[in-house]
Image (cartoon, rainbow, N blue to C red; front, side, top):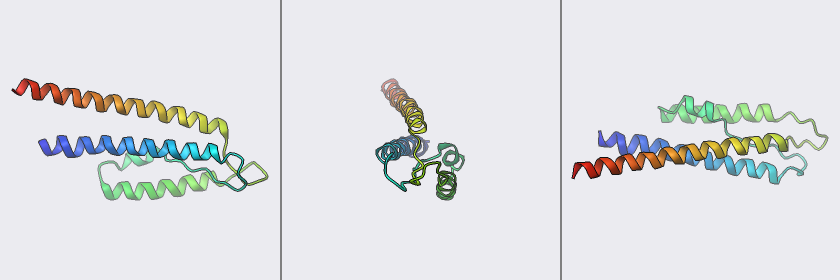
Amino acid sequence: MLDKIFNEDLGNLQQALQRTTRRQSMLSANIANLNTPGFKRKDIDFNIVLQGANSRAAKRMQDMQDQKAQEASDRVSLRADGNNVDLEREVMSIAETQLRYEALTSVTTNYFSNLKSVIREGK
């Protein structure tokens, strides 16, 4: 039971927070390269990543498939310089990622508050 509490649940929260932070960095880099000729945007699709969340091997496979799918969809550029960054899309993605991060930090805070409460009641 304790193993599940400390390793599985907390590990999943940690991974989700790390992926959210990684996505925010990617989106910021996309905006920073808005005017770089030939730059191709990068992103993480959480829906695909979360489908394989119960298995490490499945996660790795999903990550690879996600990256390939994202690269394929993002190769299309309407700009003459080959850059496929759309500022509006990036700003919307950043807002979505910020909301996801806030939700995850709230869940993490509640997790530790509940754990603290259980420990106090056990004394």
